[in-house]
Amino acid sequence: MAKPTVILVGADKGGVGKTTVARTLLDYFTAHQVAIRAFDTEAPRGSLKRFHPDITEVVDVTQVGDQMKIFDTLANSAADVTVIDVRAGLLSSTLRSLNEIGFLDTAKKGQITFAVFHILGPSIASLDEIAETAEIIGDANYYLVKNFINNTTFFEWDPATYSSYFNRIKGAKDVTVAKLNEMACEQVEVAGVPFVSFVANKGANGEPANFSFVLRGYVRHWLGNVWSEYDQVKLMDLVGSKADDGAMQAAG
Amino acid sequence: MSLRSFVTICASPRQHVGKTLLARMLIDFHLRSERTVAGFDLNERDAALNQFHPNHTTCSEIGEIQGQMALFDALVADNGVHKVVDLGHEAFERFFLVAQQIGLGEETRKRKVAAVILYVVSPDAASVEAYAALARLFPQLTLVPVHNEMLGSAQHRDKFQPHGDGSQLLHLPLLAPGLRRVIEQRPFSFVETSGPAAPDVPLDIHIELQRWMRKLFLEFRELELRVLMADLKSSIQPRHN
Image (cartoon, rainbow over all chains, first blue to last red; front, side):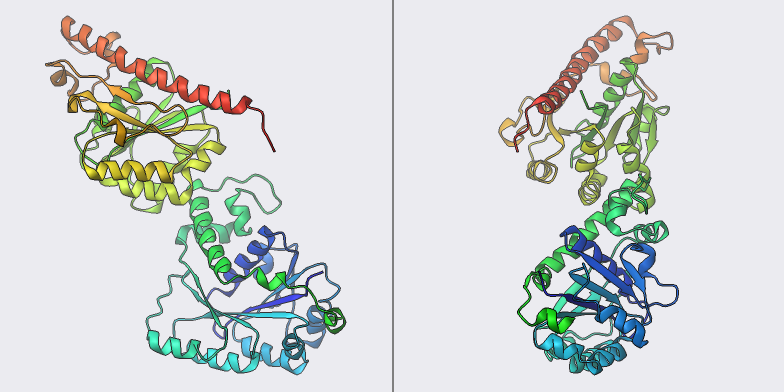
């Protein structure tokens, strides 16, 4: 059995497309036949849950009870990968909580695979977040995601400044999420289904839908590009590593 | 036989090579066969196809997504309607870029729609390159080189190899002198020259037009049969795991 993998998707700013990235990750792992589950920290309503209701639970990650629900179940869960969509502004504090409960130490020991998808905003402040986050997570798999889906232009960034921040983190990987046509993006939102279901022209319960072929085509093309970014950073390697002797014990 | 309708795209990156004439003839071919046909005019400047066949043609534009949806969603609709696209040279690149991104080839195949590109060949390098690119990017489509005999006798066969199910060089026959003036009247339907609504065409010209039309319709008919036969063959071939 593979080591449990936990992927945290977050940013310290809202509106940068965290949930969108989380959705692409769930679709990606599903397509690779990896058992997944997700936690949506947009309590009480949730936003990820609307698209992936069967595998998503809404939690309040600041509450101990909900933290137990996520982390104490890692070893016994049927899911190989747990994706946590962290509410805007809570990335740093969530990481600090994980540090306090010893989760990051467990990851450091290699008993759990831990990865952070840090969705960057267009401002310089976003670069400062990198330094802050990097300090806490240490050697975890760190992915810096430039998300262009909302037509973001990273106008405030000087490439040299970005590189200097980027290089501070050992092994950090750069992921770019391309822009998706606004109407296509909007239609998937309205449909409230996973991207792959939209592409396959299926509704929330797998029933045949009647989405535009053009919009489905754009989503398919875009999703293919996102997934090839994930392939490029060898995302499947996160779940490829087998558990060592102490992994289950530590995670349990 | 699984294919239910045809989408035919008359294309070339060059202007004045006979794309619109080809599209007009195709619409007439479907009408003569008593089929339902929808034409899509992608000529940005003069909407020529629409002027010849106003009752069967829609003017399309694909600069914005709404226009793309109106065109491509209609093209893949599995409604038994045969579709003919007159792809003006200005829209050539954009059309195939969008078609590739949204997966036109895969979708038509999935919906049992036969998709054929009638590519009017010309000897220039841009045309040769564009043809090669289409063959590479759209392996699911039938790419048919069309030799318009009005453009000269050279056929450039080595540069425009037929590609895909049922493809073979198609000839657009030479039009006898004097006929062009007649067929350039707008609107003009070749099919209607033989019916009660036929325009005032002298008998000798009418006979010549009919002869020319039959020749071309035979080319279309044979192309259709080759595509359908190729599809039939592939559907009855034993599948090996």
